[in-house]
Structures are given as structure tokens and as C-alpha cells.
Amino acid sequence: MSSTPATPAANAPTTPAAKPLAKNEGIKAESNFLRGNILRDLADQSTGSITDDSSLLTKFHGIYPQDDRDLRSQRRKENKEKAFSFMARIRVPGGVCTPAQWVTLDALANTHANGTLKLTTRQAFQFHGILKGQLWSAINAVNRSLLDTLAACGDVNRNVMCNPNPEQSSLHAEALRTAKAISDHLSPRTRAYHEIWIGEDLVAGGEPESEPLYGATYLPRKFKTVVAIPPSNDVDIFAHDLGFIAIADATGKSIAGFNVTVGGGLGMSHNQVETYPRIADVLGYCTVGQAVDVAEKVMLVQRDFGDRTDRKHARLKYTIEDRGIVWFREEVERRLGYRLGSPRQFAFTHMGDRYGWVDGENGTSHYTLFLMSGRVKDTPELKLKTALREIALAHKGDFRLTANQNLIIASVQPAERPVIEALLRKHKLDTANNVSGLALNAMSCVALPTCGLALAESERYLPELVANLETEMEAAGLRHDEITLRITGCPNGCGRPYLAEIGFVGRAPGKYNVYLGAAFNGSRLNILYKASVLDTDIVALLGPIIRRYALERTTGERFGDFVIRAGYVKPTGTPADYHDKADKPVAAATA
Ligand code: SRM
Ligand code: SF4
Image (cartoon, rainbow, N blue to C red; front, side, top):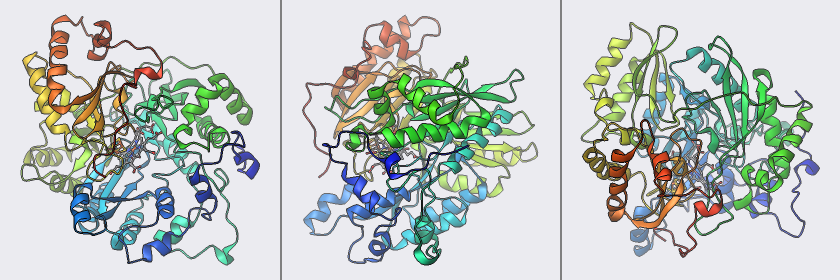
């Protein structure tokens, strides 16, 4: 496989010279491959944060400065600087980690962060609330556990996701191998990460480094890759820049190749119709052996043609919208030196997780555990973090983080199963059957108090939102019916709300845009039903629709399909589906 080197010419923006490059481009270019002044800023004890330029660069190292937004106004009154701390995102290709790694992260959450672990929508872990003085030792310890935070954020290929498929163990093993190979191949090569966080010596003599794939300015924007195994679309393949849909061979036990998808992305901004969520296109088909090469070439086309002048227009989805999928395929194939095959038949049936015990193909079994919003913490009612530590200490298989923020206790040997069952029972975690269909298919982003971009609550509001709507579902006789519900605190889409049958997107404190009508299998986006709905009005808005669905649905008809048939929303296939032009711009929830 030959890669196109990132020469300045290859990396040069193709947008009109008159438009200046986005500020981030200069900071990247001058950072000496992501070093910048990070070390200097970490040593500066006069503040709990780092400079704006370093903040941009630490993202590539998986680290974000944040502040506790609950404390902002109080700190301002007291004339104190914001309550700064750091979020660190730990990359877990395919979401698979060992029990020993879990135990390490569990301990670090207590000693270095806010005592919780967050499982993300992209099969990664996050720590919140790391104080500056402990940041280095936290990241260093993560690396000693053979995980890392490099490229978990930033303008690079992010954590590569893979369906954690417990039922089809042999397909999963192959798909995971591909996900890891892509992850390794597209990882940045800079030694900056190792110098800063692992204390490795500077490259001898300080001779120039190179980033063979990325060049000095990396990508125009973040880039996300996933591998899916039909019929499960739990990774939400159509939401990502690049996807590989595994096509099984005639035996059903091995992968023959992959359909390649490109140009998905969800982020948008309220009132800016030129930003919108977009479903990925199926580009073609490749063999297993070609997958890494294809991933590289797709990323390189985006490296060279993505818009580096406007970060709101810099994702691959806009490159494809602007230039067309035919042009894009030709450009990828030109670099590959061969044509992609015609896409093969595939069918996704769902994007949620399968809870409880399932048997694998090799005598092992797997338990999928529902975690509300992926947050692992101890509360007076539920000692979830303690329970999972005890399970990790006893478990001999692996753990798999799902794209729905849940956890699979995977590869449990028959002899081990009674031990895990007893621990699940002891901690009352064997209760998926008692949880409603709505809750089991609900997801939220983090939002307040840590996310600097949140306009409204999300994770902290989800339990109340679900409980309120569960009452309506129960009254309609739908307690165990599955409807996907997702909420985010702003329109960036971190909880993939535009792919939920019911999506809530924060506009202002206590106010949400309500979206309806996505497909249950993740193949169709939803549509704005009503803008700026007060949280207190949500039940009155949706209750009648839920009741009508219960009465009028046809056999097997999904809620998302029903609301379109019943005329609640009408897809136009234009950005108008997501925006409400009547709305005025809104300010952030707290200053
Ligand atoms: Fe996200 C920014 C959290 C998945 C689209 N996302 C952020 C930041 C880092 C806020 C910031 O820039 O200051 C959030 C940190 C909050 C916090 O306090 O932890 C944040 N995003 C998350 C996570 C943790 C949500 C979660 O509850 O699980 C997810 C971490 C995934 C991971 O492990 O890598 C997360 N973010 C997503 C997804 C879903 C996905 O990829 O499947 C999306 C939509 C898909 C997409 O990329 O189009 C997403 N996040 C964004 C965007 C909008 C990007 C865009 O193209 O417009 C931003 C803002 C930005 O990049 O400027 C953002
Ligand atoms: Fe923050 Fe918005 Fe992402 Fe939620 S969707 S985590 S509020 S950036």
C-alpha cells in the first residue's frame, strides 16, 4: 500500500486564496507537531487552566480544559477564576478493554478525577474534573495501563469504533482486527505525546519530525471511522465520516469484505442553515485486505480538499456535498489505483443494544448491562462503580464499551458465569427486564456542568425526561416497546439525537427543539417537529402522539415511521428539516 505523502502542496487548501485560513490552521502549523507551549503551560501555577493555543493543541492529546459551570456565577461574585479542571478522553479501539485496565481507570477516577467514569457514545472512556496539578500523572498512568488518549480528540482520525457483537464472535474478531488496524495506521506519528506525557527524551538532536499521513497541519477537522456488523447498526454508521459495513461470506462466520460509507456527520448550529446533519453515502465495496488502504485514501482526500477556511464547513460531509459523491469516488479510486466494487446487499434492523445474557459461538457468554448515559458512579441507591470494580476483579474475559454508552461483560467462560451472575445479583444489576423499552433505548450527551458548549441540561435531565415519558408510555400500554430517545444540550449532536425516533436538542436552559421521525435502524434522520419547547411542556406535546401511535400503528410499525405516516413531520430532504428560521440566536446557558 502506498500512501500519498503530506507535502505542503498536497496539504494546501483548495479554497479561494481570498478566504483566510481558519485560525486553528496557523496554530497547528506553528506547533512543531502538536508540542506548542503545552509543557510551559502545564508548569504555570498561576492558573488552573492553560492558554487558548495550548487548549487547541491538547485536544490532539485527548485533553480539554473545562470549568464547572455550576460554579461560574459564584466564582465571578467572589472574584475568583473559574473552577478549572480537565477532561481526558481515553481511546479504546473497538471499545474492547481488559478487566485490569478497568480496575486501573476505576482507581484513577477516584485519585485523579471526580470519582466517576464516563462511557462515551464512541466507545471511549472519559475522566472529568482532573486538576491541572494531577493531569500529567493521570495521563501517564493511563499509558502505563496500555491505553492512551492520543488522537481521542482533535483534527485527526478519532477512536475507531466497532460493533462489539457478542453473538457472532468470529465475525467480531475479524471486524475488530480491521478496526484496530485502521486505528494504528491512522494514528499520528508525532513523538510530542510521548515526550510530554510519558517523559520520553526529545527526538535525538531535535531533528525534524514528519507526519507521513497528516503533514504539519493535520486534517481540516475531526474525522470519525466505524465498523458495523449487520444486522446491528449500534455504531450508527451513517453518522460518521467513514464507515465499513461487514459483509459476511456464505458461511456467515467470516467477513468477505466491506461496503464503504462516507460523509456522515451530525453537528450543526442553531440558525445557521448552511450547517446540518447528514447521512453517509455508500461509496462502494472493498475486500478485508483493502480496508486500511481505503481508509487512508478517503482520509487523504479530505485532508487535501476539506475546507480549512471555515471550521463550520470543514467536515467531510461538506466536501462531499460541495463536490459530489461521483467526484469523491473518482478521487479516492485515483489514489487507490483500483476501483471499488459495487456495494453488496445489507440490512440493519436496529441500533440499540441487546441486554442481558447472550451466548457466543465459542461456548462463552456475554452480559450487556444498561448504564444510564454511560455514567459509572456510586450513589446512595446504586453502588454501580463499586459493583463494576468487583466484577472487573473477578472477570477473566474482556469488557466491551457499546456505542450506546452501555457495557458488555464479555467472553465469560461457563465456569465463571455463576460468579458474575452472583455479583450482578448482589448489586441488583440483573434487572434489565424491569427497565422500560424507552429507557433501554435512551441516550444523552454530557452537557452541564462540564461541557463548555452546552445550552441546556442533558445527562442530568435524562432520568426525569425518561420517567415523565414512561408514564405516558405505560398509560398507552407501551412499557416494553422500544422507541429510541436521545437528548443533547446543544446542536453539536454528541448523543446522535438526529438519529433518534424522538430527539431533543438544547436551545437554552429548559428549552429544547423536538425532532421526530428517524428510522429505528439508524438509516434516516429525524425532522424538526417543534422548536424551543419548554421542558415542562414536553409531556403535553408528545403524550397524545404516543397514545395515537399505540392505537393506530400497523403491525410492526415503528414510532419513527408512524409519525411520518400520520403527518406529524414531513421530510423535505433539505436543511429546513433541522432548522427553525423563526428562532432568534440564543446565548449559552451560563456566561
Ligand atoms: Fe462531541 C464537542 C462530548 C460524541 C459532535 N463533544 C464535544 C465536547 C468536547 C465539547 C467541546 O468541544 O468543548 C464535549 C465534551 C463534553 C464533556 O464535558 O465531556 C463532547 N462528544 C462528546 C461525548 C463524550 C458525548 C457523550 O456523552 O458520550 C462523545 C465522545 C465520543 C468519543 O469518545 O470520541 C461525543 N460528538 C460526538 C458525536 C457522536 C459520534 O461521533 O458518534 C458527535 C456527532 C457526530 C459528528 O461528529 O458529526 C459529536 N462534539 C461534536 C461537535 C460538532 C462537530 C461538528 O462537526 O459540528 C462538537 C463541537 C466541535 O467539534 O466544534 C463536539
Ligand atoms: Fe456538549 Fe453539545 Fe456535545 Fe452535549 S452535544 S456534550 S452540550 S457539545
